[in-house]
Length: 312
Ligand SMILES: C[S@@+](CC[C@H](N)C(=O)[O-])C[C@H]1O[C@@H](n2cnc3c(N)ncnc32)[C@H](O)[C@@H]1O
Image (tube, rainbow, N blue to C red; front, side, top):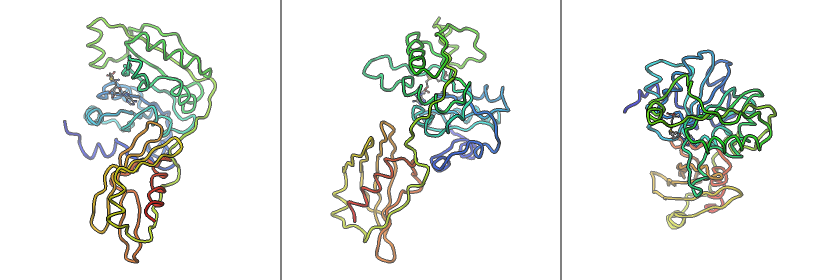
């Protein structure tokens, strides 16, 4: 499936749009209550929800590109102007991209439960999720979870109760759903139960963030590094506090070099490129390659600082 490129460019926000002190009012061009759907799948519910409440603004967070493309097609059919999409892991992006006390409602429907213990680290729900919601929700705002896994609903309710800042409803079976996605209709036919958990924020708490509000700027090197020095960088691994940066590949490029990097803040990993370019005054410039711009995080800044040390 192909997305309309103009629509995709308008709806899908990139790190370039989001890497400074973020104002959702500026993104939408108005001040309106903000709602977020985490893991929107192919966007059917988000399209329905944003149409039902046109006076609110909506942000969808999903991981696979195919979901973004399918959702764009849905949104195009209904011409929604009050929706933006962000691609990536909501466990981090919800905390990093939304200011304190900025969201009225966060909804997550049928998340992947990751039932095996060894995969539990992939579950969205947990103590960190509750801490994130205690920061980004407005007081009185809420999180709603819809799931077909009773044990997951129990685990979610426990995580919010343990946090202490929320009024939490016990998991309840629900069958009066206002709109069902294709998945949900199929599961209903199979006789699966649907559980709902609601957590309303009573006592906000602020959370620590690792996205930077100031840009990761370029560095100057005394000269273009030698072939030998550059080739020795392949596979280099820089270990910081809570972050790791690796040089995956080193490519020769016109008047310089291109490095393929992976920077991880906790388990939030980004792949991007760094360019080293010859300057007319004999020095060289070390900078993030614009076309692959990552979110400005502590790890991304640390990686550039470490490269400067090795190459100067
Ligand atoms: C079973 S599908 C449900 C899709 C949709 N909510 C529905 O009800 O039709 C679960 C979705 O959650 C998304 N997801 C899982 N973990 C996520 C995360 N950490 N951040 C954002 N999306 C996530 C997956 O990519 C997948 O599309």
